[in-house]
Amino acid sequence: MSDAEWALVRDLLPVPGWLAGRGGRPEGYCHREMIDAVRYLVDNGIKWRAMPADFPPWPRVYAFFARWRDAGLVTELHERLREAVRTGEGRGPEPSAAVVDSQSVKADATVAHASRGFDAGKRINGRKRHLLTDTLGLLLEVQVTPASTTDRDAARILLPAAKRNFRRLGRVWADGGYTGHLADWTALHLGIVLDVVRRSDDVRGFQVLPRRWVVERSFAWLLRSRRLVRDYERRTDTSEAVIRRSMIALMNRRLAARHHHRAVPAQAV
Figure 1: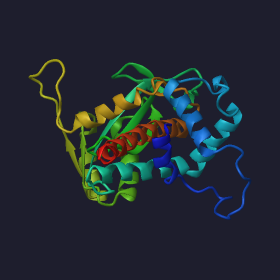
Figure 2: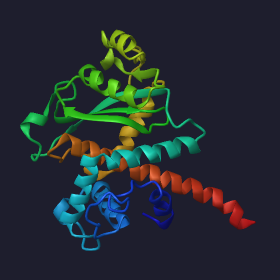
Figure 3: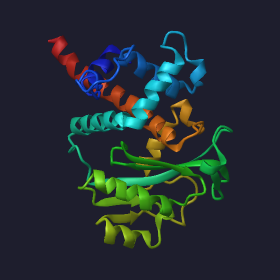
Figure 4: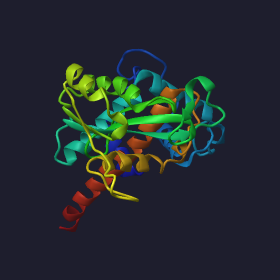
C-alpha cells in the first residue's frame, strides 16, 4: 500500500482484542506489513511458501490471514470500505438494488473432490463463484460452490443472506440462468423483485445487456488478481476471503485516488 492508501484504511481496521482490553497476545508484526503481504499474494498469485523475504515469515502471514477469515474481520473491513466508496459516490451506505451472476473457474489439484464439480455448460471442472454486486459493481455477497451447482440453487442461499444484511434491497437483476420458480420464491419469501435481463435471439456476437454488464465488469476486476485466475484454495471460505481481499485492494486504491484528486486544487492554491 502507498502511504495514502494506508492512511485511509488504518482508521477502518477492526481493533484487535488486546488493544481493546479484551485480552489476547499482542501481535508481533504491524497490520500494514501483514496486509501488504496478503495483498501481494492475492495480486501476484504466488504460493504461501514463496512469500518474499521483505515480508514477515509466511506461516505468520498465513496465520494472520486465517484468523481474519475465521473471525469475520476481513468481511468487516470490506464492508466499511464499500460504505466509504458508496458514500463518496453520493450513494447511501446500503444499496436498494443489486446484480447477481456466477463465474466458473478451473480448480487446482489441491481442491478436494467434495468441493469441486463439472459445469456442463462451460465445460469446466472446478468451482463456481456466485457474486451479488451493487449497481457500482462493488461486492455485496459472495458464495463459492462446486461448479456443478446451478445458479438457482446458489441464489436460494445467496439472496436470503443478502436480505439479512441489506434490508433495503428490493430489486435484483439476473441473467437467464435464474429463470423459473426462483422469481416467485424471492418475491414471496424475501420481498425482492428478481428482474431477468434476457439476451436477444436476433443479435449475434457480443452484446452489452442492461445492468448485467455491471457484475461482468466485477468479474473482470477480480481476474486482475492472479490468485483468482484459478481456484487454488482447499476451503471454499478461503476462496471467498481471497475474493474479498481483492475487492479491498481495489476499493482502497479508488478511495486514495479520489482523496488525491481532491487535495490537488487545495495544494495548488
